[in-house]
Amino acid sequence: MEIHVKVNDKPVTWNVSPGEKLLDVLRRDGYLSVKFGCGEGDCGACTVLVDGRAMRACLLLAGQVEGRAITTVEALGTPDAPHPLQTAFVECGAVQCGYCTPGMLLAAYALLRENPKPSEEDVREALDGNLCRCTGYKKIIEAVLLAAERMGRS
Amino acid sequence: MLPNARVCLYPRDPAEAVRVMVEHGKRALVMAGGTTTAMSKDPGFDTLIDLTRMGCDRIELVGGEWRIGCNVRLHDLGVHPGIRKLWSGVLSDAARAVGSRPLRNAITLGGNVVGLFRWSDTPVALLAMDAVFDLVGPDGTRSLEADAFFARHPRQVMQAGELLAGVRIASDDPHGCGAFCKYARTEVDLAVVDVAACLQIDEQGRCSKARIAVGGTRAVPWRAEQAEKKLLGSKLTRRTIESAAATAKQEGKVLSDVRTDRDYRERMIEVIAGRTIERAAASCKERG
Ligand SMILES: Cc1cc2nc3c(=O)[nH]c(=O)nc-3n(C[C@H](O)[C@H](O)[C@H](O)COP(=O)(O)OP(=O)(O)OC[C@H]3O[C@@H](n4cnc5c(N)ncnc54)[C@H](O)[C@@H]3O)c2cc1C
Ligand code: FES
Ligand code: FES
Image (cartoon, rainbow over all chains, first blue to last red; front, side, top):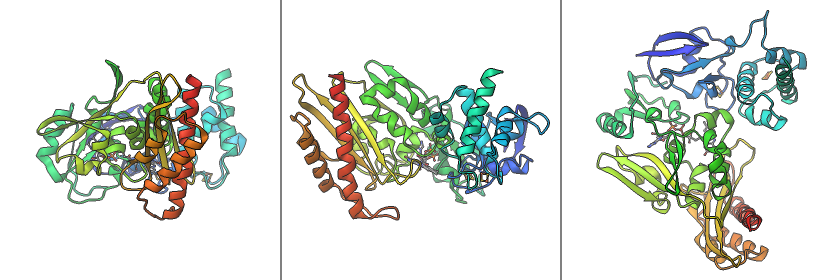
């Protein structure tokens, strides 16, 4: 079946089974920032934005995203021109193994678009579905608050 | 991954959804947010039916009642200003208690209610609020009150090809207030016990209506009716509340599971019911 979506603002037509997981389709298409962690909605490694909202790509079938706009971390920044969130993550030491990082960045990105001046509590709530086995979260939260502050200034 | 799915259908309204559900019967996987259904690997499904494009995604106040479409996502329900005031926010608090933010972005009210699990949070609030459930099926439409809807699992109550179009809740009585408490091992874990309380007090400060709904402990949420009786006519003193909570503990047929055994769960009904009634009573008193 043909599924028409936008991935990172680019119109794409997939010829896939509507019963395939969005996670698998995206990875096969080269969006390798979208990670497989638990496959059951618990960890957040597979987070993508669907029409601007953070969702689990492991709990969405391709058929469900027909006509939707999908955002992955590939859209956020490049090594030469990183997004302020990415810069803040590096500066704050919010990345260790990096497996959770794309999901964290997208959840944080969705938060800052909805609420450019989040409190620490808002950040904790927005990231409550993203597990990190390395950093202990403190630095991730600091990084999101730092990015918010810098983005508010610029 | 559904190995044999070939097409996905997008009905534009509930009547069309019922038509395609009847046409495809057991060969169709009927999906809303997908947070349970997308996990299916069943080779028997050749068709997907995506219910989320039926236009049932509004929260409206119409003629003295709130109407909430089946496709409203739990995040939107949790932050809606009107729903946060209704019965002191019992339903919005229940919606916010579900899983994590990305899950609440996906999960629909219809999916949380019809795909009921023992620990589902919003059904407990809906039962305490006397919500009415609007069903659309091959034989037309019908509405069920919460007590009837949760008498058994909704799937047993609903007929083949029937869907939940939305729920209705009478808009707040100025003397009505409530509270919802979820007890789970962590913020994002499944409920061990959920309690929702909706209370009304009269001019003399006496309780004139009480609804105590308990979830997490058996297949469907249930009302602690003996506990409600203890509260009726009382001034909601600490002693009455403690006695009602102890009664609620006696009323439940409680199950054990991997999270919690029966004995602990029973004790927690008393603790959480007491806490919930106390919070509801406090918000009644605040309102005066
Ligand atoms: C990791 C994880 C944690 C979770 N934690 C919680 C929690 O703490 N509390 C909680 O309450 N829930 C929790 N859930 C959610 C719950 O388990 C279900 O996944 C969710 O309620 C299903 O809703 P959905 O909209 O995604 O529906 P789907 O998964 O798409 O559908 C679920 C069922 O409902 C049926 N259905 C959906 N809409 C309708 C309708 N309008 N009419 C008729 N039938 C319909 C479908 O056919 C299907 O049988 C969690 C889920 C996950 C994956
Ligand atoms: S892989 Fe999707 S939440 Fe873990
Ligand atoms: S950095 Fe390793 S899981 Fe988060």
